[in-house]
Image (tube, rainbow, N blue to C red; front, side):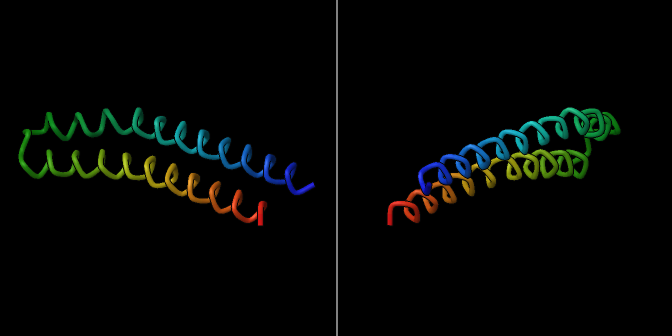
Length: 82
């Protein structure tokens, strides 16, 4: 029973991670015209800084959940074997 529970939770975590990443890719596609518009508005250092921060935030919102899923998976595996 515990092995099937681990398998179910593992699949659920992986599916959630993939859904979250796809959502962030959608956000990047929708944000790209805004960031490009900021660049076209003069290419000032402030506009470039805002664009870089936006892209960095999107990257972090993809990377951090991937790390969290890996840690949660390791925790679940350790919990189920103990």
